[in-house]
Amino acid sequence: MITHLGRYEIVGELGQGAMGVVYKATDPLIDRIVAIKTITLSLAQEEREEYEGRFYQEAKAAGRLSHPNIVTIFDVGRSGDIAYIAMEFLQGRELRDILNDDQLLPVDQVADIVAQVAQGLAYAHEHGIIHRDIKPSNIMVGRDGHVKITDFGIARMASASVRTQTGMVLGSPKYMSPEQVMGKLADQRSDIFSLGVMLYEMLTGQAPFVGENVNAIMYQTLNSIPQPPSTLNAAVPDMLNFIVAKALAKDMEHRYQNAKDFANDLRACRESMPRSAAPVEFAKPASPSSLQEASSGIVDMGDEADSGATMRLSPSFDSVGATMRLAALTASQEEVEELSKTFKMARPSIEEINRAAPQQPQVFAKPPLSVRPVTEPRPGKGGGLVLMTIIALILIGLISAFLF
Image (tube, rainbow, N blue to C red):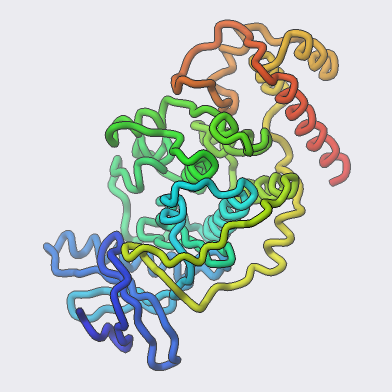
């Protein structure tokens, strides 16, 4: 094992990263423990230039960002055939390791973790940086539940010198957005979709899109609508079903348009839920293969976290017309007629529902996981509860419009 990288003294090896070894080291100038992420540049010239460019792009991307929910980059350098980035040494566990414990986290704690990730993404997006690879292994959770986003290795910046080739797919298949699967240009809404996939997995213990191989997963991502999380975890409230559905909308225009709204809705939903009796503590050491195992630099979010918790829902989840179509699919005939009188709108016909389906925001389908045309209204079980939720959301939007 190497003993030095630049001025840094190597203490030990933490594990293997995506492109090289990750070390624990000390900075003798200021007596600080850091994590050193490396890549070996002893490759063919063309590969070397691409990897080195991608590596420095990560440093440039993350180094521009200063936010409590994004890992802090201290330094970047090169020593012989090894390029390296020095970053804060995080105390806690990878979210991937936590999910591998095969125990669902309390729903309110899930909402808090994902809201923190959304806040960090919102900040990055405001600075023109798209992560493009949001997944549990790129999220670190501190012992106190504080969250940090890591690995901006394939981030796309407006000024990036390393460009993605046309049609080249970057990211992890299980968490990629439909537009990434198709090789189209990804923007901040692609990160939101990936975060929605992660939220679904945290709530249910399983990914929303699965398959025997990469092609099967990509097909599911493009064509399948997963069943609502509450059907797999009874502790998930209806409001969280709607939030997940909006994050996983296949049409980018029907998805959350920014991560800040996503975070605000999650925090508002969390405020409406009872707190878990014994929140999970993330003190167990990470596995040897984790990117980073421990640190002394967790930053308190302070007022920022508190302000987000009391913010109201986004203006609306849907239009009144689409709400009527949703009600026609999920509620009884009497309930739909009552809602029709309230909105002073005619009950939508089956033809209208089918015609509007490609344009309306995504609605979760019942199992099995397949896309099927609407043929008749289904007075779904528990339709009254869904209808009450829809009316409550609309009333919240109307009240907000008058008050704000």
